[in-house]
Amino acid sequence: MHDIPDITQTDPLLRQEAVAEYIDVSMATLEKWRKTGRGPAHIRVGRLVRYRQSDLDRWLRQQTVGGEAA
Image (cartoon, rainbow, N blue to C red; front, top):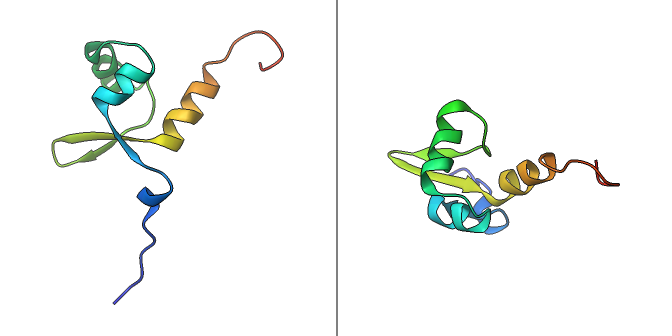
């Protein structure tokens, strides 16, 4: 049997409702971003959509404009 590391223990998968609430956008906006490739990377598990916390954090950092962080 193969030992496959469980990345969800250190990199949780978030439901789209939690992501929409966290970044303060509507579910419709999140869906539009998925369809156009503009939003954070996502995972499809069958019909379910999930987001890795690390992908969401990376995407949020990429949205930073101006100031010292840019």
